[in-house]
Length: 201
Image (cartoon, rainbow, N blue to C red; front, side, top):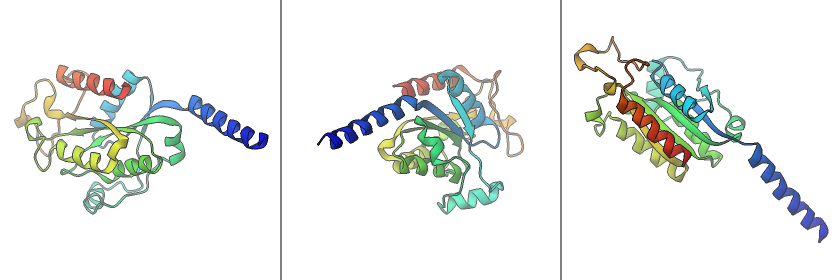
């Protein structure tokens, strides 16, 4: 009887210790144009937390796009052991052609496997007015929510069309709009603040 009680007490004490040692947040980002990295850095500063780049052995964007189209998860550098160390994960990454891209999906599936809460943010080049279109960010957020279920606690999106002084004609397939300290508008700053508030709550 005493042995069973002692084992139970030891188990409870161990769980409390693990919880105390667990860090608050980890930001995991995937970025090819540095837009998602810029948002990740903003969030990291506001939340005073670590960030790490999601890496895949597949670097070819065309191949990654095709794999994402086929809905195939891919191996990434972020381990389950790493994710276990944090209370919640914040995932930041881009949209490619209205897809929830494979590197982001792989992180989400690791979170699901560990029953780990996560927050999800997208960066995109599509116009804010196209957010509900086939290639808009709301389409991808719906996919992420369907995959994450009740583990996805909040979402946000940051379109480069919201930068200060944005003129659509200035940008094309060869010249992309990019976030920087000078063009990060009040609307974008406000979105960061709202997302941070959701994460903390």
